[in-house]
Length: 352
Image (cartoon, rainbow, N blue to C red; front, side, top):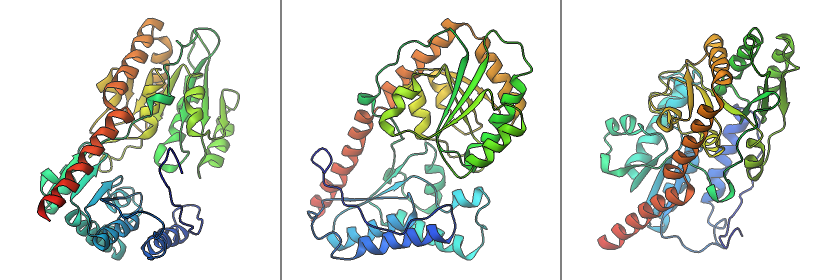
């Protein structure tokens, strides 16, 4: 039980990476949820939401919705399989990709509503024959009730640049380390130190790269922290950094990364390396933007941020916090989701 809400955990085989073990995990979850005895202790639902954290989870939700004869709401977190195709992990015309395309089309047409996290995902979904009124944009956000406004960053000591999040291939963190090696060539009013907080498959390789570049004295690799600890750790930063890869096909539908909204809530300037079709940092006036996958551009952005007057950085910090409070608080986003769920249930009752 969590805040009076029952959660049912389903045992599945563990996996590491994106190979066959992950596929077994996905399929095991799907089949486990569909077993009639699995959900026997839960009350019958009024609506079922299936999230595409992987497509077979959404498939299970759609099948269960048909079994219970209730509306199915499809939450599209990633555009499977297009994301994998754009990242070069799947061949566009391969057997797996074709099968997943068939599954996603079926899910889109089966859903009463489609909730998308990416602001321009409708440009991908509507050409598949989906009515635009079925698509609702509800982005990621942050629980502001556990993320108080931090104190103003100190101007004493070194300038702490912080990365909070996964250490994976999608994050272009080797570009960040190369940029830090270039920053050392500049004479700055404060020494720059980078804190890398998080875990992931690329972390050992990144630690080796930091050693090879001779920047281990200014870069620290720290363990991931629990979600509840993020506000405390984020308050220790002078600025945040986020790096995307230069994948225009992947990011043409936009971005909605959890850590980006944590950064905005953390009320510190943000340096983002991105060419995505949307940019919350620019929309909020919360920092600087540079080209992705470009160590020289990222280094120049770091230098510019350190040389920016403290009152300007403070305005960026406040602007970011104001923006996330106005648009991405869980209270606001939760109300939007509740409106969608109430709407599909009322529609179903009106037809029955």
